[in-house]
Each structure stands twice: as structure tokens, then as C-alpha cells.
Image (cartoon, rainbow, N blue to C red; front, side, top):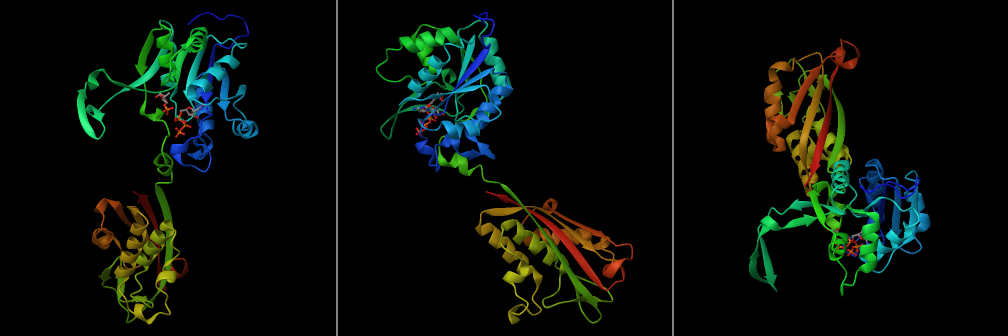
Length: 384
Ligand SMILES: Nc1ccn([C@@H]2O[C@H](COP(=O)(O)OP(=O)(O)OP(=O)(O)O)[C@@H](O)[C@H]2O)c(=O)n1
Ligand SMILES: C[C@](O)(CO)[C@H](O)COP(=O)(O)O
């Protein structure tokens, strides 16, 4: 890299362009200000560049967004805010012009819409500036490539020589500022590397990263919804003579059974509540009220399958479930594998997605005195 022009000049500055409208993303506000993984997209981009060693940020924003962006970027100082232009290229030019007084040795030019910038990409770019005036991160093309003539296939393109171009793109500051000032293209350049190349600068290619994906369409934000949901369930039934004992959908031989409105399968009831909880669907009493005669003596298998269907209707599948049965007797160990297999069958999942455990309460409490059996469960549902 070139040596510093003044003792106080920042070594590395970054222009983050955040002045677009983000129309394709269809968010309630421009995509760079929308939330992604819990924080505004722009804040992610700024934090990543700071963490990668940038000394000064120049953030190019829409007119009138100063106070919003100042709040959004609090803690990432020093930064300067600059108003953008009608095109990305104009916005970049405004940012570079605003850095002339600071006169950094090198500048990264980055889309705010690429929030996840790994520090090692920046390190590769900076290293390439030792020998080049410009460096850009690229990725190979993995699909075969063709040109399109309307909706018909044209000639095949040679993917071996094609690359996908990402940002941040790195430049010696004076060189890219001069290149932007000298740009005479009739149309905007696709990116700053093209501006640099048009000015005769050699542009080095370094390895990019899939994490640098540009958030462009609505699905880039919808995919950001939580993909994993968890629920818990707990149930207790009274042990009584003359009742059958059903646990995890199996009839267990024992001197007492569980009393209840349905078959009183306490383990399945806890599991149903866990699944309904994870799906945001209330609890077992809401769906199968004890006051409703149709559930008298009903097999709890039906409750479980209904809960699974409700979750599926919301696009949620079973990730894994974990059930704990709390009793002194009967011993659960001899039945554990059969219980696991039966729950897996009812849930429609592989056996290793189901776990059944048991514990005693050291003869304490109602379970310890053999008055009842309790069960608790955790269910993890996975979207998609
Ligand atoms: N006049 C513009 C246009 C774009 N950008 C920025 O350039 C980056 C890449 O542009 P793109 O992803 O195309 O964003 P938009 O132009 O905002 O998106 P769209 O075309 O969907 O409206 C974004 O960070 C965007 O905010 C900018 O600063 N000034
Ligand atoms: C600069 C860029 O992100 C490099 O891939 C890309 O050219 C921006 O294109 P857009 O049409 O402004 O999204």
C-alpha cells in the first residue's frame, strides 16, 4: 500500500453505499435499514468493516435520513454521513469526494446491502493492494452458463472464465477518486472495479465469500425468520386401581393405571403441549376440552397426530422431542426403546429424533408416594 500522505491520515477508510431505495426487497423501509438477524442491515455492514480494521467510515445515505442513521450507527464512530445520488455510481462518487480531506491511503467501497463481511476477505483485499491499485472479491460460477435471446437459449458461455463479483472492493484512494472523476461512460458502470479498469488500473481478483451475499429480494429477509421453535409441556395424572396404564402410546402392565378423561397418557399429553407450544397453538385443553364427550376414553395418539398436523400446516416439522417420565413405578427402562419407537412412528420421524427418559423423585411428593405420574417434554420444530 502507499505510505500515508499526512501523519493523521487514516490508513484505511470505507465508503458504504446505503442510499438506494431497495425496491426489489419490498421491505417497509429501504432494505439497508431493515432488520436482519436482529439488527439493521447497515449496522451489520458497519460493524463488520470496523472489526476488519477500517479506521473511518463514510456512509452514503438518502436525503433526510441523517438522524435515523446516526442512531443506527451509534458506537461505530468515527463516521461521516454523506447524501447519495440517483445511482449507485453517483453515491460512491459523493462518498469518495467527502473523503478527500481525510485522504486515506486505501478505501473499501462496500454495499450496505451485504451485511456479513468476513474479516479474512478484507485481509486478502488489503494484501492485494500491495501490488495492485485495485482488488475485488470474486466467486466461481457453479452452474453452466448460456446467453439468453429473449426466452430462447443463445450461445453457451464459458463458466471457467466467469466470476461473480462482490463487495467490498479495495482501492488505493487517490487512484479510485481520479478514476471516478475521469469516468466518461454513457451508462453507469456495474461497479467500481469497472470504473477503475476504464481508467487503466489493473484489478486483482481475490477469493470472495458466500457470506457476502447481497440482500436483494424479499426472500432474503423472509429466510431470516427464526427457523427453529421450541416448546415445553408438563402433565400429571392420578394413579388408581382398575385403570389401564398407557405411556407413550403403549399399554404397560402395572397394578394401577392412570385416571383421566381420555386414556390419560401423561407422556403423550406433555409432548402434545410441547408441540403446540412450539407451534404457538395454545395447549391441549384448548384443542381437546375435557368437557367435550367425544374425547372420553380417546386414545392420546389422536391428540399427538393432530398437534403434528397443526404444526405442519404452519410449515413446521418435528426436529426432535425429549420426554421425561417422573414416577417410582413402573420401571420405564424395560419399555424405553419401544416407547421411543412408537413415538417416532406417531410423529413420522426417525427414531433418533425421539428421546424418552425417566426419573424418580426419591420417594418425595405425589410421584414419590405413588399417587400419580408426571411427565415433561421439550419439542423442537423446524421451519421449511
Ligand atoms: N442511488 C443509489 C442506489 C444504490 N445504492 C446502494 O448500492 C447498493 C447496491 O445496490 P442495490 O442492491 O441494487 O440496491 P437498491 O438500488 O437500493 O435496490 P433496488 O434496485 O431493488 O431498488 C445498496 O447498498 C444501495 O443502498 C446507493 O447508495 N445509491
Ligand atoms: C456492486 C455490485 O454489488 C457488485 O456485484 C453490483 O454490481 C450492484 O448491482 P446492483 O444492480 O446495484 O444491485
